[in-house]
Amino acid sequence: MSVWLPPVPYGWEDLVSNALCEDIGTGDVSAANLPHGRMAEWYIEAQGSGVVCGLGIVESLMQPTEDNESISFFARDGDEVVPSKIVAKGVLAASDALQYERTALNFLMHMSGVATATHQFVEKVEGTKARIVDTRKTLPGLRLLQKYAVRCGGGANHRMGLYDAVMIKDNHIQAHGSITNAVTAVRSGLGHMIKIEIECETEDQVREALQSRCEVVMLDNMVPAEMAQIVHRYAGQAVFEASGGVNLETVREIAETGVDVISVGSITHSVPSLSFHMELS
Image (cartoon, rainbow, N blue to C red; front, top):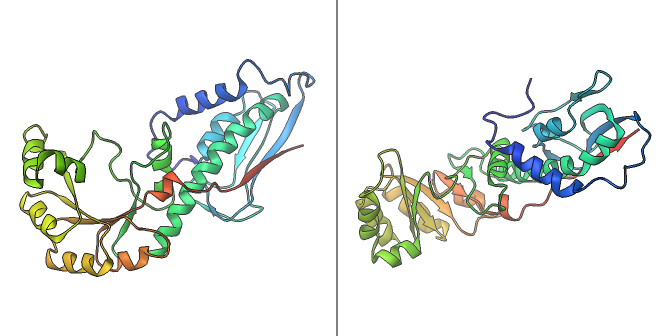
């Protein structure tokens, strides 16, 4: 059984290769004098409670290449872990294990942190119809892995980038002069598969957005009472997304307004890592 949660993010191999090259550089001077043929048993253990993510990268780095090497997993991406839970173990050439250790843990800890933070938000909105989604506030170069981690934590993905959906924000509206002008201009060159979302700060903007026949309305930095009123008044006319001021203390109240989607930037841009360590013997 694969340790990845499908679909596997595209291009992860290049990210891992670049990270490994960054760390090893011209050679690992710390492990350079290890005896030839020295083997090591290793295991990776969780040091905190959360959702594990990134085991596929561990597998790629610690993969056996000789008959006397091995690897076993005791979890897969998306599983919950607790302190002292061993998620993987194996036998590898000691020099390889020491070279790959930090790169493997860096990806595992960060991606598990994203998955864990997402899961915390998902648990807070349980019983409502609201889905927790990510944003484009991701670390440069790591977007696909971070968005994969969001899925492992039980969340869903917003648009991947500027290319797969239209979002007309306040600056677009300012540049075009109005929501109507912005949508008209965008639709003139838009394929039928691309949805349009419009960021709205007032109910007047919501009405104009709905008149433009957009598919998604973002209720930006509105108080829950105002969101609830708008969602009730215009139910069924669009997907309603809440954004701004979302944290673990406020997300439940926001979800109870009846919005369909809640976007949370913090689950990717400022999430703490979930701690793991690797031990060799």
